[in-house]
Image (cartoon, rainbow, N blue to C red; front, side, top):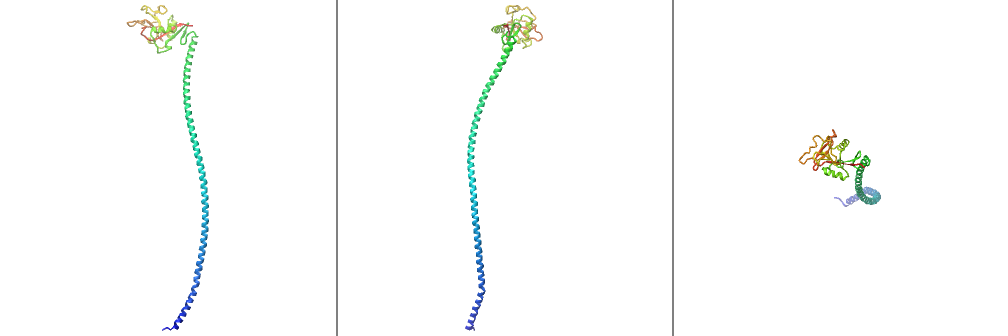
Length: 291
């Protein structure tokens, strides 16, 4: 059984043991506190440094952002200015294009007008050239006849001759109308007086070969007396060698009473046929004295 003294003694021992134990743990707590304080200080310093750096970064970012924004604003203003210039240039180009289109249309109209005028001039030139050729032909004919025959007439010796085919190859007449045409021209149908004139007449009607349809009326008929051929100057033709073989034959019920002469390249003598004065339509030849 434990006494109170023993109890007190144990209490004292316990108290002294506790003090010894507390004295051994206190320095450890202080060290921990000190370490925590140092850690807090370091964290604080780190936090301060981080804050400073963040502030610097933020300021730098603000500066960069501001600088970039300023640059963008400058470029935007530049682009706006250029855009306005481009729009103005486009408007000017559009107006210039409209002017050019209008000028082109006017130029095209003027070209068409000038072309029309030029075509008119060309037609006038062609007409004048044709007239010039005709005048030159008339001059040549006039000079060839020494001015003694009318234009279109041929001079032989002292007589002027007109061959109707030289004026028109499509116009043909019967004997009475042919003589009337010669009279209208101040002449009469040809009267062949000699061999030289026979050769001349034959050589100037080279438009057919021994074909009476391409022949020419001459001033010789047997209208008054059948078989008696008389020239329009009342001279009776007695030369028979100028008739083609078998001519005159007075062919047909109404007979053939007017003389036709043709071109025969092999023989200038046998060149005459008799034809129907009122029915046959052929060329004719006229003659009149030269001036």
